[in-house]
Amino acid sequence: MAEAAESSGDPGTTSPRPLFAGLSDISISQDIPVEGEITIPMRSHIREFDSSTLNESVQNTIMRDLKAVGKKFMHVLYPRKSNTLLRDWDLWGPLILCVTLALMLQRSSIDSEKDGGPQFAEVFVIVWFGAVTITLNSKLLGGNISFFQSLCVLGYCILPLTVAMLVCRLVLLAEPGPINFVVRFFVVIVMFAWSIVASTAFLADSQPPNRKALAIYPVFLFYFVISWMILTFTPQ
Amino acid sequence: MAAADELAFHEFEEASDLLAETPDAATTSGSNQLTPQGHVAVAVDSGGSYGAEEEVEESDRTALLQEEKQQPGFWTFGYYQSFFDVDTSQVLDRIRGSLLPRPGHNFVRHHLRNRPDLYGPFWICATLAFVLAVTGNLTLVLAQRRDPSIHYSPQFHKVTVAGVTIYCYVWLVPLALWAFLRWRKGVRERMGPYTFLETVCVYGYSLFVFIPTVVLWLIPVPWLQWLFGGLALALSAASLVFTLWPVVREDTRLVAAVLLSTVVLLHALLAVGCKFYFFQPLPLAHPAPPTQAASLSPDLPPPPTSSAHTT
View (cartoon, each protein chain N blue to C red):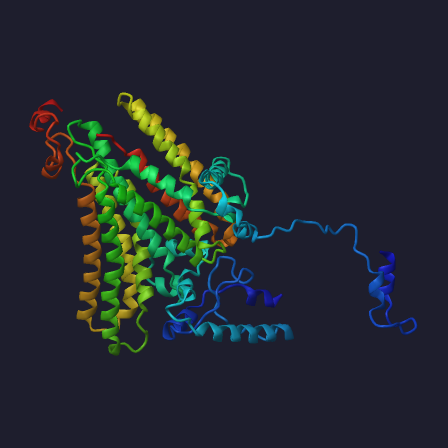
């Protein structure tokens, strides 16, 4: 290292040297870390070109996709800053969750037309159009996340609220009363907070820091509306 | 140093008037070194106290400004992105500006500064629509606890009604206002009319004060509800009037008076309509109102007249 400093320090005072002669003496300093990892973004595409997936059994295909969906569920339930949801996005998980939630939330047919809870179509539209609006908002604010990646994250983070819906339905089988309501309220609040934390862990990094709050607020509103629908669900 | 005074940010009245006369002049957006609050800085020439590098930066900035003038076409994504070019601090500042209207302080000139955004109006309307539906439903819950004969239902259709009403208000009324002001443009010499987006912005941000008001309407005391409603309406309408006053001031008195009173009247109609539709005055000690009776399912307890005697 001292050699490098000396050789670059006096280029003109000694005898004329050939061009770039000092380059061979330059060595990399010990305290500049030159390590990292190289990830190949096209990995999943390369997998698809492998022709053996055409010949495998149907069970293999389905299990592979189900395992991918299950792995992402685990990432949502234990949110850490990781790129799995973003890198290998898929929309199966959000579809399963949305259909489950909408089926559980729809009002029964004997309820009056005007005054009841949401229909299946209303829940479906709110979830998907809400997710699309939030994604568009995030992109318009200048975020560098792709359209489907954002839809994937928002859809998967409905998982805690779907669990809350299941718990609420079970609790509603018991007798009605204030304790019933308090339990449901508590469960919904906890799952709402979990959803927000999970989606923020994945989405926050895609925005510049002076606009993070602008991008996160619609997510908060979205999950708030879904939580409200779950909390006000009354079986007939 | 004397130069330190020049570097401090001064609120120039002449500068905002200059902006008023040439609304198409592009201004530089707030960079963090010059104005920490995110205000837009007018490119005032600060004298020859800088070196040659500053000249290069100035020419870069003018080149950038000229690029900004060429707006992308409306079919490109970049066109719509220009309406969302705001930071968190700017949005908060605009909300604060609409909450505290001052007579001399024109919202469009001082807060928007020719960079209207669509983020504020869109999400304020969405929030207001959902908050209206949710708190309207909550009053039903609270009323049912007092009077168990009232039938509780989630009333999900009110979300749709709230959303449609508020979005139509924030888009159609500014459209009409903008069209009317452009038609009367010939009468005005001093100040150009606002663009359509600026009008939408003013209306959108002025609705923000209704969000806490609607939440406060949960308190079931009628005169308090009317008090809060009146306060919110006064603040919101004042913000609108102070913004529109410099534009209609040069028009004939009759037109100015009619326009301003129409604006205030429509705003009042919205507030009162929301109050009555979402917060139907529910009874404390007398029978439920007829609209509630229509939704009662047939297997509920006998008509509410008997409950009047029990409460």
